[in-house]
Image (cartoon, rainbow, N blue to C red; front, side):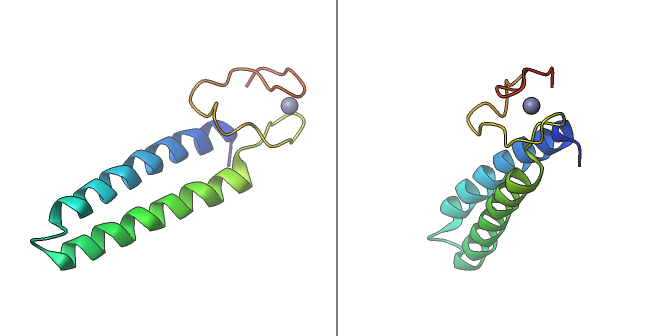
Length: 84
Ligand SMILES: [Zn+2]
């Protein structure tokens, strides 16, 4: 997977994960079944983001792990300086 694709997937899954958790909290008291469905989905998406981050969030030139906090705005590799 290209690191740009990984970035899009991570941001999308991260947002979906947060939305699922919020929806789960919304239904927590009225519909416990929906709460468990959304909570499980939210956790699964968060784990997916973590796995994609570990496997694919790397510089295409030097192969080093890119910093986590700069997922949305990283333009250059901090290690080799190549344009991402
Ligand atoms: Zn690099």
